[in-house]
Amino acid sequence: MSTSLTTPERDPDLHTPLGGVSLTAGQLPRGAAPGTLVAAAVAGLLLWLLAGWAVVPCALLAAASYVVIVYTWSRAVEGPRKATDRFVTALVSGAFLLALLPLVSVIVTVVSRGAARFDAEFFTNSMLGVTGEGGGIYHAMMGTLIITGLATLISVPIGMLTAIYLVEYGRGKLAKAITFFVDVMTGIPSIVAGLFAYALFVMMFGPGVRMGLAGAVALSVLMIPTVVRSTEEMLKLVPNELREASYALAVPKWRTILKVVLPTALAGIATGVTLAIARVIGETAPLLVTAGLTDGDNFDPTDGRMTTLSVFSYYEYQSPGLFAEASFDRAWGAALVLMIIVMLLNLVARVISKLFAPKTR
Amino acid sequence: MAKRIEVKDLDIYYDKFLAVQGVSMTIQPRSVTALIGPSGCGKSTFLRTLNRMHELVPNARVEGSVVMDDDDLYGPNVDPVNVRRQIGMVFQRANPFPTMSIYDNVAAGLKLNNKRLKKSDMDDLVERSLKSANLWEEVKDRLHKPGSGLSGGQQQRLCIARAIAVQPEVLLMDEPCSALDPISTQAIEDLMLELKANYTIVIVTHNMQQAARVSDTTGFFNLQGVGKPGELVEIDETTRIFSTPSQKATEDYISGRFG
Image (cartoon, rainbow over all chains, first blue to last red; front, side):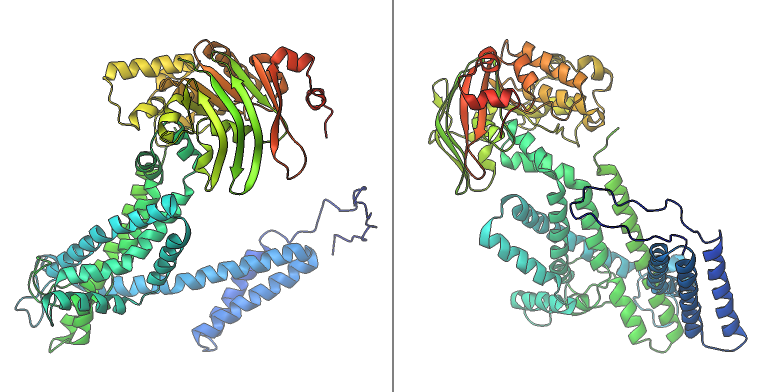
């Protein structure tokens, strides 16, 4: 250890500085850590390719040996603080790579398999009368957009008004109860939401009812808590000073909320809503029960079965029929389209938050 | 414009905690009244009761009376919004609305209340308010840029312009210069001296030189002890408070001997 310190006497009254800390410390040579990483990776590769080990143990072994070598080396040269720093940095980066793995894997799989059916017919035709190859997802795309759009129309007003109540007005037991039930709603399994919506519509329209609106209701049950939570967080971020500034100008409370608090939080709220949409747009189970499946175009959410991308994808995979390969291609194609829609929604969320964010220049 | 405020036996509570006790004072129109005293003695709390901002804190309440000319501000049918229409406020930390331009910030008092003015009248009002706040020359070329892009001192003057754009009777200022440099402070003090020709101004300050420079009357608040309510020790002409105060506590505080 280069920082060879003798612990100085501690003054019980803290009136004298402790002193004795050297300002210089040992350092690993430049490129030591990356070099070790490369060496460990090469060793792992060799084990995998030449010794014929499986991939996972090789990768784990390489990672572990990197951590051990760098930690001991650094501890010997740089001292325990920097060694711990290197150790934790390695752990954090490792966790990040581990989290990235499934994501990359999903993207690669969906893109490579879904790309097979990226033709004009796929986007303009429905499945009406198609038994073999060909066919398209136009009906499912429209179904997804209509049902999710309706769900948004239902959940955003309810969710935002609830959040405004909780942040601006709610005091005491009622507010606590609402917060509690919103939390409970966040944890509702999506199939339960679907069954709830189905039961509700059966009460109104009789057994066996299937319609897009029921699907939208099921999705909004899932969406409302997310919208409430994100809006609530954003409203809480609005500084109280702005509300006071507004009150001091003799602006009533409701106008203050409408014209000062909401505009200030708008960017965050819009982002939250978009992410809530992205979260429910891929739901399958509740839509299976409520909206069902149909081969043809049906753009009327109050009349009969309606197909969505996820349900379509599920059915193509679950009952492929005689021309299985064509069915699988359609299923992956629909999955890819869904993924692209979600990605676009995320981009939209970013653009919105840029556009609405309070500017300083 | 400019009204007299009579405060009588005012007790101010946060829930069950008595924060300020037994304040009686007369605030003269067309003058600057400064409130000084150590931290936590209830100056700001008292100031906020003058335009009923105090009750925005849950369970906060007051006992006693605050009468502006002939209207009891805490009378049974008084709408706090109407009180605030006549008594404006400037806060310790400049708080321009971040979503609004400089122009809209000044016009906020009208725009947020949906008062429609002709464009030329509104332009005129914004210009006059900014001129009164000594900010016009610095911002006239960027009226439609966001208000949060200004410096701290400019933002505070923007907040003053915003407060006087609605032409209140009384202007309350809660340590308006505590976050500002001496030059901005000077600008705001000059402004107060100009504004007192038309407004009743009450200012809370920790800076005794400032109180001596700008105010006609000074009130000294103090705490009896830890956990005890704050109270108004004495209020008198500023010159007398700073030369021959009648209370020993005031003299100790002014001369730096306290505690």
